[in-house]
Length: 481
Image 1: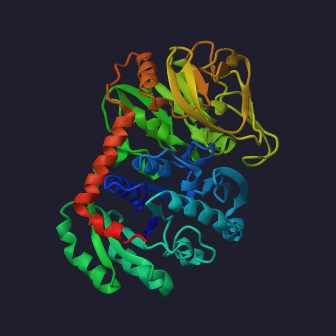
Image 2: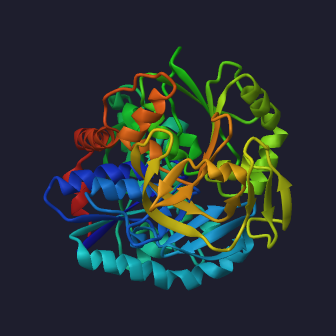
């Protein structure tokens, strides 16, 4: 019934991976461990066993602990819908949508929910490993903070500060953090570690000593770059990595501005017979694309306009005329129809947006959000698979008469008359090894034999081994209280 928090000197310094690896290392010591992140900002969400949603990183950390994901592991989830506004999910359920300035006023009201979830986890496990958000050095955000030092002090949880040497300036990152935070906050920090070193870590011995001397904090080690991190589900689009292959079935995924649940692509990236391209804004659709996937989006109408601004709608129509295939998942499914109508302005400005028109369906946005895990059967192949729904909106039209899947005897999704365009609301389908192999076989691809779940488990073990080799893990865990 102890806890320890990993905070970072900035966003994307590797906190999620560090916590996942420490979770697995602690479990291997015979401890009952749970992950926790007070506040997360991500459109890559996981549906939990208790029917809510949390950040994908906490779902991965739960897996590292041998647990099913639960809403208590991430009680506040912010899902950006525009550059200035986000949906606020509290203990797994949508609370409201606010602009950034409005959220500052809302935050203090959320601390009770954060501590409620944290204390419940703490009462159920030997150890809770907590991940911070952003950086405690953002002292302009300190009033009302629930994500970093505000939480650490309220929960009396010791902190270890992680710096990212790969982005440069790591000495200033750590020493500067101590310089700008309050003395009471600095007192919560038990020590520091350096993450993502490339090359011989001994080359940083002088810098490491300098940080320790200047801060008075204990150093727990230098972690070299973990090359297999790409095999684990990424939560931030900055972390998306795909193997560079010269041949194979060329699958192109459009990297939308509000892309959501993009870890749908991870199992495909690991298939030896697949060449996966995450297409960036401003890039035309490759002429040699075999399959184009339009992924989920937190702002379907907004990303539909973004897609058109790249000229991808015309590229998709040309791709289809050439005999290419298209799959839309969730928001991507909605975009493939004739129109997406948001009469109440749930995701942005009220009104209808013309779709790409490759599926004969129309979508109307409603305030009813569907969050559920499902067992489905893919109609074209007859292959069963596990997936989940996390969406608003309902789609109707003639192409729904040719369903993509069946769930509990009900038709789901749609397929065009020529069979080359499909849409589905089901996420996570490619994680199911049987479905992924059947789907790839439909394109003449001989899929690999590796189990995606086994690959993730093996990578979590390798990550824990990596941290054990380069950090004093026993000393880190001993900091918990």
